[in-house]
Image 1 (spheres, one colour):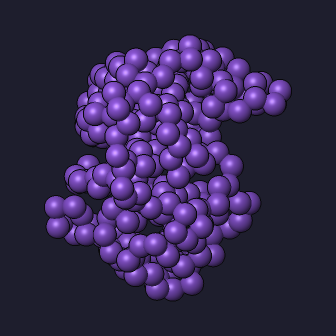
Image 2: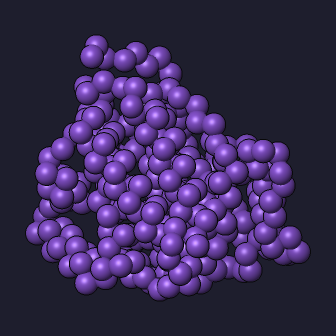
Length: 273
């Protein structure tokens, strides 16, 4: 059993609850994440949830999917272009229902899998447990842009420990994706969970310390907030360099958002239904 599959399902359900109350027109409104709309974000999540399921049980279909994606992008199309085609152009409530159906199927499939099974991905191969954790992370991260767009403060649960743990484990990846060696050992991380519990990693490290709210740490490693837009306390050169570039997701190096670029957007009024 992979218990993280239920955390992924719960994270998806939280975003579904928000989106189930918006109008068809609001799905098309741009967010502060690369001006992607909620439609684009849902297509992205749906397509890669499907891909994760395929990588677990039908790896040849995943390899074909990834090859098609790479081919399309080499021919000048964007990832969003391919995801639009993958979803047959669906949008709004119909797209929301398609995504919901797929995230439930994905959670069901991973829940009964061997946690140590190796699966392929766009980056390095990973375990099945890491794969479904990555789906929770991406849902939470992209969901942040949607919560921000509609002026909704998300009430996080302690299931984000999975995301924080992924963030800690990808310390080396942040530097590897930039063709750099880590400047030292991973620093200590001391976080306060949504419940008030204390989570610690590398407590005896001499490479510095990151401490503060778990939600804000997750926002930094998923690049939904700049470190300067949080109250995290960062000490030590290694910790400071890591937090300035932290990246817990696969793909090439991405620059964190500029300070103030991503934030809760106040004053949202729903479009008429």
